[in-house]
Each structure stands twice: as C-alpha cells, then as structure tokens.
Image 1 (cartoon, rainbow, N blue to C red):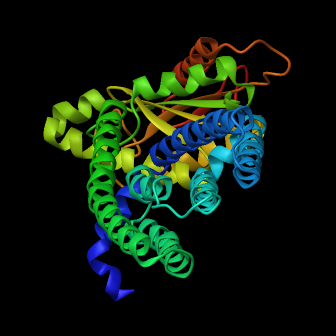
Image 2 (spheres, rainbow, N blue to C red):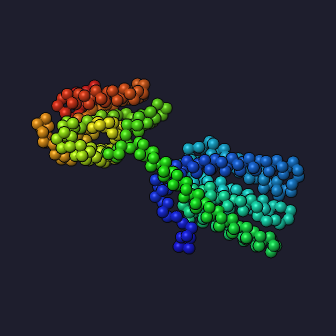
Image 3 (cartoon, helix red, strand yellow):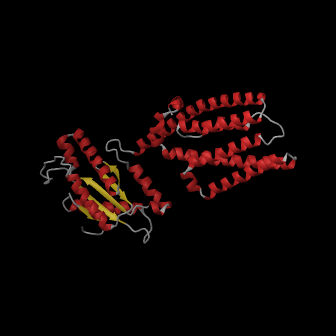
Length: 368
C-alpha cells in the first residue's frame, strides 16, 4: 500500500467521518445522475443502432446495457432509502456498468479503434466519486490495466500505443484533479457543518440551543416517529444570587459544568439536552414512560448535587448548586401532536417544583 501513499489523503479521514451524512447525500445525487444519463444514453444508442442498421454486436451491446441501466434506475427509484444508505457501493456499481459498456462497445466495432468512452470514464470516475483516495485510485487502476491488456491482445501496435498513452494521460489527470476536487468538496462540507454547528450550539455549555430544540420539535409535525414522548424543563436554583455572590465569570464556569453534566447524563440515559435560555434548560426523550421519566428526573437531580459546586447561602440549605425540574410525558397516539403544549406543561411542572421549595422534581398533572 505504501506505493500508493502519494495518491492517498489520509488527513481527510476525519473529514469523511465528520461529514458522513453530507457525503452520503452527495454520492446519492451522483448515483441518480449517472444512472439517469446511462439509461438515456443507452436508450438513444439502442434506437440509433436499430434504426440505422448497425452491426448485430453493437445492437446487442447497446440493448443489453440499456436494459441493465434501466433496471438499476428503477431499483434506485423503488428502493430509494436502501440505495441512499449504501450509496457509495451503488455509485461504484453504476460506474462498473458504464465501464463494462465502454469496453464492450469498443470491441463490437467492425474494425479496431481507439478507446474513447473508456478514456472518458477513466477520467471522470475519480472526479465524481467522493471516497478515500486510495480506494478511488485502486478502482480506476483495475479498468486501466484491463483495457491495456485487451488492447495489447486484440489490437495492432498503432492502436495499442495510442490507447496506452491516452489511458495513462487521462488516468493521471483524473487522479490529480479528482484528489483536488474531493479535498475541496470535503472542505466545503466541513465549513457548512461547522457553521451549522455554531448556529445550533450554545457556545458556553456546548449543548444544542433553543433554535435546535424547536427544529427537533417541528420534525414531529410531519414525522410521527420523530415526536418526543417526554420533556424536562430545568432551572438552576437561585442562579441570580450565585452570579451576584461569585461574579459572572464563576457563573459562566458553573453553567459550563452543568452543561457538561447534562450532556453526559443524556448520553447514558437516552435524553437530548438543550439550553433554553439563561439558567434554564430543556431535555427531550423518545422512549420513556411517565414512571421512567420520573426516575430519570430524580437521578438527574442527584447527579447535579454530586457535582458539589459550592453555594453556601441562606436561601440554599443544601450548600451546593442544585436544580429544579419539571417533567411531562405524552401519548401522541391518543392526542394531537402539540409541541407548544409540551413546553407549557413541562414549564408548569417546573413552576410547581420551584413552589415546593426547589431542589426537587415535579411531574405535569401529578404531585410527585
């Protein structure tokens, strides 16, 4: 593999990992475009070959690849989600189909001729496929080697020399240009990802912000499986006094610690946390019933106490930073989806927790 190190770009490994969804969407668009062009091209060529009496071999090649590309296009249309999930595999498959046509058509002619469509494919494959460089280059190297062997075996010296020169020139150009194009595409995806992350992430706590919360909630309007069935609303107890007592810098450190605590708790307990605003936070869950939600709420209260962030003031008998928490659960199969109602119910439960002395949890509609 060291032989191909100059063709590889291992530094892009992290970019591929961070932008997996964007890469998959791009590959799916390439896959659809390639199969559509293949289907249209083979259809036109099949019509022309039958209309103007091309050789039988040409007719068979054009018709065979028209049928194959049409079947592949129909498959992508019917099994859209499946094909998009494995878009990289199907992109390679689409180009294998085109390369098969290019080589077959070249040897179906009445007389030997130089590679044309095969050379075009060799050039555009590394430009269009967004994958690790070594894998793209290896994929390109195989048809180049096959084409050279076939040309050597089946063509005279003049065509063989022309094929070798054309194939290697366009292969080198495709690899160099393709590497640059892939790098720029990945950088573009990464810039968009970082911008989106910054737009949707609270800079202090590193939790998703209020904008992202409402994006999650709005998904449930059109997608029932995306509807959360539980919500937490939380407030840091006496946080204004904490800021006044220790200063805003200490307040920021406290918020950051609480944010890290929530993120870790959410990963372990199936909850997605958001900073709602100021010292108020929110969390969503999709898999917990009312009892499980109540148990998770109590665990979260204790987890925040265990941070042992000192806060010894008269209004705070615990001596450490605590939170008040309101929670609500919903059954959307029995009621109309209303995310604004979710927020109001959870907020009412939070108000109940505050009115019962803070440092406790209360469920909507229940005095627990």
